[in-house]
Length: 397
Image (tube, rainbow, N blue to C red; front, side, top):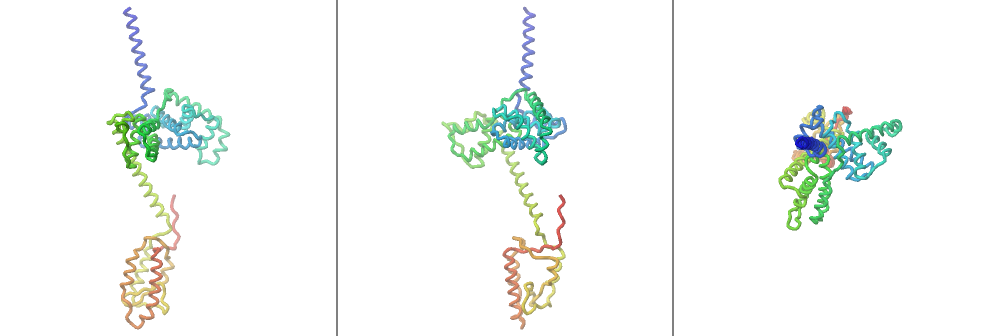
């Protein structure tokens, strides 16, 4: 009797250990930030955290585009992203091509969310998207169709094994919509912003760290802060109580979201500045060359020049004598329009403050000077800058 009890006890211990191991493998889909950054399977193969983050964004963008091509709902696309996140918490990027795994995740997600797609159609669409840079991909798919089909089916078995056949995925969308209905919230723009935040967090590791209702609550709070809208209460309860979350953990989630959002905003601003700089460098307008400036300076230093009777457009008056700018300046430089490149007010003040010739030639020169000033003022309305006529060197790519 005692031996039988000991055997039963030992069997329960073994069963308990097996159950715990199975639970760790199948149900531990939420990880700490330290586990994701330091103990990911890709880390042991030499792939650092930043590179893995980049790959995560790549396969999420690929899945979004593939879902649009297959015309599946956003819920199916989100499920495919979650499958992919979980797979790479069990397997390394170094040993599994992300485009192939992402395609398999979408194929399995279509089945899981009851939006199935025919394997024949799926293989063609996925292959064309992977090789969209290659015009011959649509013709080549006929030759390797069977191979790609087998690759998807083998990948599906590998994915199911990595997921331990756990395809139960909960998304923040359901919690967000349910809470908005209970709060009787009518601000549609705020709900749209919160929905977009949920889509953004699905492309990050937040969905591997926090449960869906925390993601939904944090997204609604961040949207309200950006839109500057006060969240309502329902039956004397604060808004966050509708999500069934703890305030302390929700605060941690919101801090992470805020940090990620500010980082993405700073990145987008830097990209905008970089694009503006590229446009400036690629524009045909350039600064005056040193030869142009030197010729202009030497021509202004000449004070004994006189204008013609008609007065040229390039003549000015300096120190009581009219000065004519040599025409050879136009051979190496030309005038082009450019807004904001010349200080108009300073040039006008200099022209007005110059002393007019008090000699007998004043009446004859004044007409030419006025014509020149009128021409300069007309050009200054659009702005002028000197541009070299020599051909520019081609940019190195």
